[in-house]
Length: 268
Ligand SMILES: C[S@@+](CC[C@H](N)C(=O)[O-])C[C@H]1O[C@@H](n2cnc3c(N)ncnc32)[C@H](O)[C@@H]1O
Image (tube, rainbow, N blue to C red; front, side):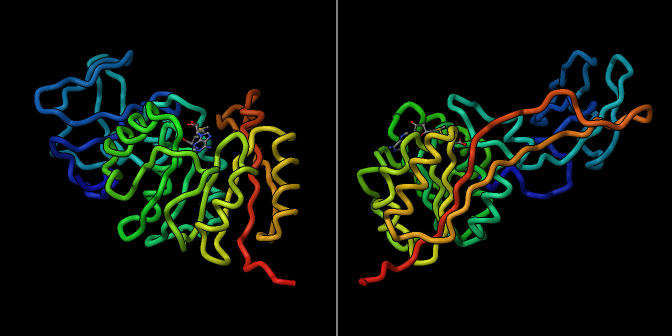
């Protein structure tokens, strides 16, 4: 299966689309012959969608307008995956992608894999030549992550291994790493061995205590430089013709992100 994010504009049976009513009502739907798409806004027969153009408007049985859109990766992160663990949010993943310099062909290390949310993003950016090597120490999560990756056609770009990253990894010469485990300071030697010189690492850290401990451990390790930490606050602006203003509620905290780059340790 190719990635579901292939950009064919043809609305044909088997394709997955995003049915958009408004910013809060969006559904990922597979176009299956003879089926009806049901929501609190009424039903839409799938047969009335095929042969339309992507971006077209349709009307439900309750006379409500909806639009047929091409799903993006973020639509799958928000709507299309099974979550059994905390995941890294899109606001944080955006910076991580840039700071790791992710591109097609990269071989990337990830631990832990959890639900595979971040794995999907990594695979999307390194495909088709690159590969993600994921380590996860809970077997039951590996199956969930594999299911999420297969649903998007990204499984062939990922190898998930059952193991503890703190005890070492099999790969060498990797281009980048992302670490989201509770005690990443215990994984520094594994990371140092697995990465090629100059490769970047992103550590996702939920609390200040963990951030402090990680920073001190990296500082003492001497194998990494360009150490920086960030917290990203994303505030939505509500848009209406009456009043444009920040949303009352926001996600106040997800985690801190610490970045570092591997260097060749000096012998002096
Ligand atoms: C918060 S989840 C990762 C979520 C992932 N970053 C995402 O966005 O979907 C943390 C995962 O790390 C795994 N884990 C914890 N310690 C580990 C270790 N030492 N080696 C490998 N995996 C580990 C846990 O089992 C859990 O699934």
